[in-house]
Length: 218
Image 1 (cartoon, rainbow, N blue to C red):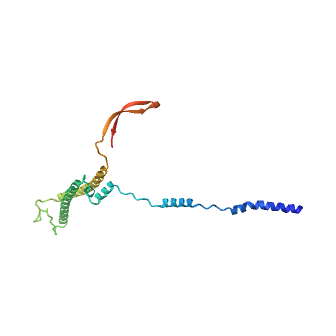
Image 2 (tube, one colour):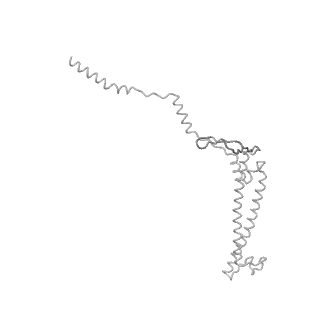
Image 3 (cartoon, helix red, strand yellow):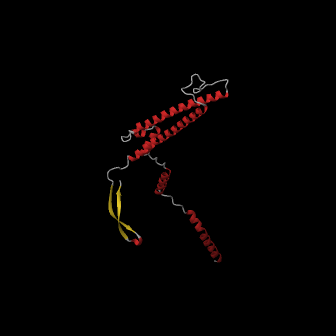
Protein backbone atom coordinates (compact mmCIF):
# COMPACT_ATOMS: atom_id res chain seq x y z
CA UNK A 1 0.00 0.00 0.00
CA UNK A 2 2.86 2.31 0.77
CA UNK A 3 4.38 1.80 -2.66
CA UNK A 4 1.01 2.19 -4.28
CA UNK A 5 0.49 5.57 -2.66
CA UNK A 6 3.99 6.60 -3.66
CA UNK A 7 3.46 5.74 -7.31
CA UNK A 8 0.05 7.38 -7.25
CA UNK A 9 1.57 10.63 -6.01
CA UNK A 10 4.32 10.51 -8.65
CA UNK A 11 1.75 9.92 -11.36
CA UNK A 12 -0.39 12.88 -10.21
CA UNK A 13 2.64 15.20 -10.10
CA UNK A 14 3.64 14.14 -13.62
CA UNK A 15 0.18 14.85 -14.97
CA UNK A 16 0.06 18.25 -13.24
CA UNK A 17 3.51 19.28 -14.53
CA UNK A 18 3.08 18.25 -18.16
CA UNK A 19 -0.55 19.17 -18.72
CA UNK A 20 0.00 22.98 -19.40
CA UNK A 21 2.71 22.50 -22.04
CA UNK A 22 0.61 19.96 -23.83
CA UNK A 23 -2.41 22.20 -23.76
CA UNK A 24 -0.29 25.06 -25.08
CA UNK A 25 1.06 22.85 -27.87
CA UNK A 26 -2.39 21.86 -28.92
CA UNK A 27 -3.59 25.49 -29.06
CA UNK A 28 -3.76 26.74 -32.61
CA UNK A 29 -3.75 30.39 -33.55
CA UNK A 30 -7.06 31.34 -35.15
CA UNK A 31 -6.85 32.05 -38.88
CA UNK A 32 -7.98 35.48 -40.02
CA UNK A 33 -11.32 35.42 -41.70
CA UNK A 34 -11.92 36.57 -45.26
CA UNK A 35 -13.17 40.01 -44.13
CA UNK A 36 -9.89 40.79 -42.40
CA UNK A 37 -7.90 39.62 -45.40
CA UNK A 38 -10.01 41.70 -47.74
CA UNK A 39 -9.56 44.77 -45.57
CA UNK A 40 -5.79 44.28 -45.51
CA UNK A 41 -5.77 43.83 -49.26
CA UNK A 42 -7.82 46.97 -49.79
CA UNK A 43 -5.51 48.93 -47.54
CA UNK A 44 -2.47 47.70 -49.45
CA UNK A 45 -4.05 48.60 -52.76
CA UNK A 46 -4.97 52.04 -51.45
CA UNK A 47 -1.46 52.67 -50.17
CA UNK A 48 0.25 51.51 -53.34
CA UNK A 49 -2.18 53.16 -55.75
CA UNK A 50 -0.56 55.75 -57.99
CA UNK A 51 -1.54 59.36 -57.20
CA UNK A 52 -3.88 60.99 -59.63
CA UNK A 53 -2.37 63.62 -61.90
CA UNK A 54 -3.78 67.08 -61.45
CA UNK A 55 -5.06 68.76 -64.57
CA UNK A 56 -3.69 72.16 -65.49
CA UNK A 57 -5.98 75.09 -64.87
CA UNK A 58 -6.99 77.46 -67.65
CA UNK A 59 -4.58 80.22 -66.52
CA UNK A 60 -1.71 77.73 -66.46
CA UNK A 61 -2.57 76.50 -69.94
CA UNK A 62 -2.77 80.05 -71.27
CA UNK A 63 0.62 80.91 -69.75
CA UNK A 64 2.28 77.81 -71.23
CA UNK A 65 0.78 78.50 -74.66
CA UNK A 66 2.05 82.11 -74.61
CA UNK A 67 5.47 80.88 -73.48
CA UNK A 68 5.66 78.50 -76.45
CA UNK A 69 4.35 81.05 -78.96
CA UNK A 70 3.80 84.66 -77.84
CA UNK A 71 0.17 85.69 -78.18
CA UNK A 72 -1.13 82.14 -78.48
CA UNK A 73 -2.73 82.22 -75.03
CA UNK A 74 -4.59 85.43 -75.92
CA UNK A 75 -5.59 84.52 -79.48
CA UNK A 76 -8.29 82.00 -78.59
CA UNK A 77 -10.40 84.34 -76.45
CA UNK A 78 -12.66 87.14 -77.63
CA UNK A 79 -11.68 89.47 -74.79
CA UNK A 80 -7.89 89.38 -75.33
CA UNK A 81 -7.37 88.67 -79.03
CA UNK A 82 -6.59 92.36 -79.63
CA UNK A 83 -3.48 91.99 -77.45
CA UNK A 84 -1.84 89.86 -80.14
CA UNK A 85 -1.13 92.73 -82.63
CA UNK A 86 0.29 94.83 -79.79
CA UNK A 87 2.55 91.99 -78.66
CA UNK A 88 3.96 91.39 -82.14
CA UNK A 89 4.25 95.11 -82.86
CA UNK A 90 6.42 95.38 -79.75
CA UNK A 91 8.58 92.45 -80.82
CA UNK A 92 8.92 93.88 -84.34
CA UNK A 93 9.94 97.33 -83.06
CA UNK A 94 12.43 95.95 -80.58
CA UNK A 95 13.82 93.53 -83.16
CA UNK A 96 14.34 96.35 -85.66
CA UNK A 97 16.29 98.50 -83.20
CA UNK A 98 18.33 95.50 -82.06
CA UNK A 99 19.30 94.85 -85.68
CA UNK A 100 20.24 98.48 -86.44
CA UNK A 101 22.30 98.86 -83.28
CA UNK A 102 24.03 95.54 -83.83
CA UNK A 103 24.87 96.54 -87.41
CA UNK A 104 26.37 99.85 -86.28
CA UNK A 105 28.28 98.09 -83.52
CA UNK A 106 29.81 95.63 -86.01
CA UNK A 107 30.77 98.46 -88.39
CA UNK A 108 32.52 100.50 -85.71
CA UNK A 109 34.13 97.39 -84.21
CA UNK A 110 35.65 96.38 -87.56
CA UNK A 111 36.74 99.97 -88.25
CA UNK A 112 38.39 100.13 -84.84
CA UNK A 113 40.28 96.89 -85.49
CA UNK A 114 41.50 98.16 -88.86
CA UNK A 115 42.55 101.46 -87.28
CA UNK A 116 44.57 99.61 -84.63
CA UNK A 117 46.18 97.41 -87.32
CA UNK A 118 47.12 100.50 -89.32
CA UNK A 119 48.65 102.19 -86.28
CA UNK A 120 50.68 99.12 -85.30
CA UNK A 121 51.96 98.38 -88.81
CA UNK A 122 52.40 101.59 -90.86
CA UNK A 123 53.99 99.65 -93.74
CA UNK A 124 50.82 97.59 -94.32
CA UNK A 125 47.96 100.06 -94.27
CA UNK A 126 44.46 98.78 -93.46
CA UNK A 127 42.43 101.91 -93.97
CA UNK A 128 39.01 101.70 -92.43
CA UNK A 129 35.86 103.34 -93.77
CA UNK A 130 36.18 106.36 -91.46
CA UNK A 131 39.89 106.96 -92.04
CA UNK A 132 40.78 110.15 -93.92
CA UNK A 133 43.60 108.31 -95.73
CA UNK A 134 41.07 105.90 -97.25
CA UNK A 135 40.16 107.18 -100.75
CA UNK A 136 36.65 105.77 -100.24
CA UNK A 137 36.11 106.98 -96.70
CA UNK A 138 32.69 107.79 -95.30
CA UNK A 139 30.90 111.11 -95.15
CA UNK A 140 32.94 112.13 -92.11
CA UNK A 141 36.34 111.29 -90.72
CA UNK A 142 36.27 109.82 -87.21
CA UNK A 143 39.35 109.65 -85.01
CA UNK A 144 40.55 106.73 -82.90
CA UNK A 145 38.78 107.70 -79.67
CA UNK A 146 35.48 108.38 -81.43
CA UNK A 147 35.57 104.93 -83.04
CA UNK A 148 35.98 103.32 -79.62
CA UNK A 149 33.23 105.47 -78.10
CA UNK A 150 30.78 104.72 -80.90
CA UNK A 151 31.50 101.01 -80.70
CA UNK A 152 30.70 100.89 -76.98
CA UNK A 153 27.61 103.10 -77.42
CA UNK A 154 25.94 100.81 -79.94
CA UNK A 155 26.98 97.71 -78.02
CA UNK A 156 25.29 99.00 -74.86
CA UNK A 157 22.15 99.94 -76.78
CA UNK A 158 21.96 96.50 -78.37
CA UNK A 159 22.38 94.69 -75.04
CA UNK A 160 19.82 96.92 -73.34
CA UNK A 161 17.28 96.28 -76.11
CA UNK A 162 17.81 92.52 -75.76
CA UNK A 163 16.98 92.82 -72.04
CA UNK A 164 13.87 94.89 -72.83
CA UNK A 165 12.79 92.24 -75.34
CA UNK A 166 13.12 89.56 -72.67
CA UNK A 167 10.98 91.64 -70.33
CA UNK A 168 8.40 92.08 -73.11
CA UNK A 169 8.31 88.31 -73.57
CA UNK A 170 7.70 87.74 -69.85
CA UNK A 171 5.02 90.45 -69.89
CA UNK A 172 3.27 88.56 -72.69
CA UNK A 173 3.12 85.44 -70.47
CA UNK A 174 1.88 87.40 -67.45
CA UNK A 175 -0.76 89.13 -69.57
CA UNK A 176 -2.12 85.79 -70.73
CA UNK A 177 -2.12 84.36 -67.20
CA UNK A 178 -3.75 87.37 -65.52
CA UNK A 179 -6.55 87.75 -68.06
CA UNK A 180 -7.26 84.01 -67.88
CA UNK A 181 -7.64 84.42 -64.13
CA UNK A 182 -9.98 87.38 -64.55
CA UNK A 183 -12.31 85.36 -66.78
CA UNK A 184 -13.43 83.40 -63.71
CA UNK A 185 -13.70 86.50 -61.51
CA UNK A 186 -17.18 87.91 -60.85
CA UNK A 187 -17.25 91.51 -62.04
CA UNK A 188 -21.03 91.95 -61.96
CA UNK A 189 -22.78 95.12 -60.78
CA UNK A 190 -23.69 93.55 -57.43
CA UNK A 191 -21.18 95.64 -55.48
CA UNK A 192 -23.07 97.31 -52.62
CA UNK A 193 -22.22 99.18 -49.43
CA UNK A 194 -24.65 99.79 -46.61
CA UNK A 195 -24.67 100.99 -43.01
CA UNK A 196 -26.00 98.59 -40.39
CA UNK A 197 -25.61 98.02 -36.64
CA UNK A 198 -22.99 95.57 -35.49
CA UNK A 199 -22.84 93.71 -32.17
CA UNK A 200 -19.34 93.69 -30.75
CA UNK A 201 -18.38 92.07 -27.41
CA UNK A 202 -15.77 93.95 -25.43
CA UNK A 203 -14.44 93.76 -21.85
CA UNK A 204 -16.61 91.85 -19.49
CA UNK A 205 -18.50 90.19 -22.37
CA UNK A 206 -20.86 93.16 -22.50
CA UNK A 207 -22.49 93.55 -25.94
CA UNK A 208 -22.20 97.03 -27.38
CA UNK A 209 -24.11 98.20 -30.45
CA UNK A 210 -21.98 100.19 -32.86
CA UNK A 211 -22.28 101.45 -36.42
CA UNK A 212 -20.28 99.84 -39.22
CA UNK A 213 -19.94 99.68 -42.97
CA UNK A 214 -20.64 96.47 -44.86
CA UNK A 215 -19.23 96.08 -48.35
CA UNK A 216 -20.74 93.24 -50.35
CA UNK A 217 -18.25 91.85 -52.89
CA UNK A 218 -18.96 88.80 -55.01
